[in-house]
Image 1 (spheres, rainbow, N blue to C red):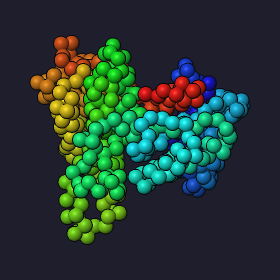
Image 2 (cartoon, rainbow, N blue to C red; image 1 turned 45 degrees about the horizontal axis):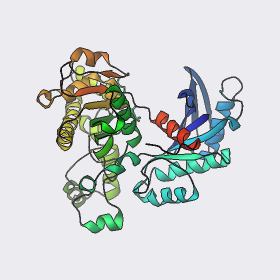
Image 3 (cartoon, protein in one colour; image 1 turned 90 degrees about the horizontal axis):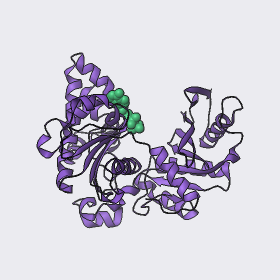
Image 4 (tube, rainbow, N blue to C red; image 1 turned 90 degrees about the vertical axis):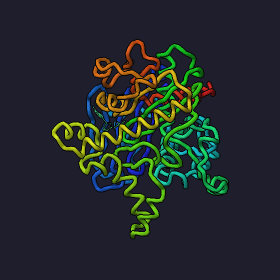
Length: 402
Ligand code: ADP
C-alpha cells in the first residue's frame, strides 16, 4: 500500500511517500515559501534531486506541485495519484481529545479546529493540508497523528500547573507536551534493544533537534515531559528560552515591552541563538567554541546543564530507569554534546563510554560502559515512518494504534 505522509506548516509542506508494510521510502520532498513570489519545491529520490521554482499560491497548488513531482515520467515514482491509498498527516495539537492517531472524519476535523486556539500557528496549517489532500485524493483515508497524543497518559499531578483550578477548567491551561510521535517511536525501539516488552520499560527519552524536549516514560507510557501548554517550556532550544521565571515577563512589560514582542523574543530570539549572539545551530557553535569564541561555549554549556537537570528530575520521578535515549539532529549527531550532558552523572548510574560515544553518529547504538546500571542509547528518530505505520494500521482497519 502506498501512503503519502504530509507535514504541513503555514508556508511549507514536507512529504514522504512510503510503500507499506515494507516501510520503504519511495520519495521525499519539501515545498516551501508557499504564497511568496518565488516558491520552491524539491524532491529527492536515491540522492537524485528534482527542483521546481515558480510561484505557488496556496496549499492546494502546492499539492498539485507534489503530484507533478511524484508522477513525472522521468523523475517521478508513480504513474498516477490513484496509486496512493491513504494519507497520514502530522497534526500538532490534539488537546485532551486525541490519545492516538485517528481517521479524519468531519467530527475529528471539528475537534482539530477547536484545538487551534492552543496552537494558532500550527493546527490551522495542518487542517489546510488535510483539506487540500481530501480535495486532491477524494475518498481515501486521511489519518491525523498528533504530537500531543503520546503524552495524554501523563497524570494530573504532572500535567496541572499550580494555577487557580479554573484556568484549567475554563481555558484548558495544562501541560500537553509535544514531539510525542518521536518519543513513542524511540521508546518502542529502545524496548526492542532492551529485549523487553514495549509496556515494561522505564526510559528517559531526549529529543534534541531544533525544538528540544525530554520525556519520562514508565511502563512504555509517557508520565511527564518538559514541554507544556506550548513547545516553549522546558529545555533550552535553538531559539526558544525554555523554562524561566514567569515574573520576567511582567518585569519586561513594565519596562515597555509589548506582549507580542516578548512572544517573539522568547520563541525566536532566545535559546542558543540568544545566549551566544552567534547561531542557533549546535554545529556552528561547536566550531566557534573550538575557534575560541567563549559565547558559543557558554551557550552550549547552558544547553547541556538544563538537560542534565531534567535527567536528574526524571530519574527521581521514575526511581531509576532502564535506559536514557538520545534522538533528534543534536542527540543523534553530536557526540560532544552527549558527553557534555552526561559528564558527572556516574553516581546516578549513567556511565558513558567515550569511544562508543564518538563512534555512534547518525545511527543506532549503545554508548554506555559495559557494566553501567543504565543503558544509554542513540536512536535516530523516524516521525514520518511512525505516521506511515499508524496510517497503514488504520487504513487497513487494524484499528489498534499504540
Ligand atoms: P528538526 O527539529 O527541525 O527536525 P533536527 O532534528 O534535524 O531538526 O535538528 C536540527 C539540529 O540538529 C540543528 O540545529 C543542529 O544544531 C543539529 N545537528 C545536526 N547535525 C549535527 C551535527 N553533526 N553535530 C551537531 N549538531 C547537529
